[in-house]
Image (cartoon, rainbow, N blue to C red; front, side):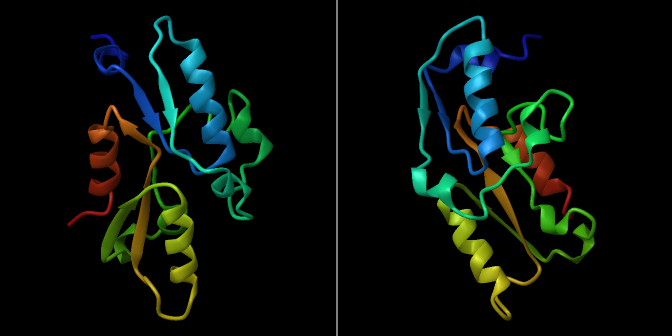
Length: 137
């Protein structure tokens, strides 16, 4: 089966990257495809100017920790302690950084995983299900 079939069937791609490396890989993927679809990026500049929106240099190169575009980004805070999560919030764009700020305040969103949707169309249902199922019930 063609891994790009969903993209070929869709008339456009909508992305909402929250990290510089994912933004880079979104643009790189768009150019690497053998077919063309319009790319709509719903990421304001202030999102990428946010002091928390950082990516290590290794994420930009092949063989790094993030070698390609990720449609869904799991919460790195809970990566090793998923059994402690009581709820998951799916969000995208600047809202992620706003929720992150609330979580860092005393008592705000403790035990809540923040899962980021980096692509809105075609909707990455499989990737989102994998992220949500990793937290159990």
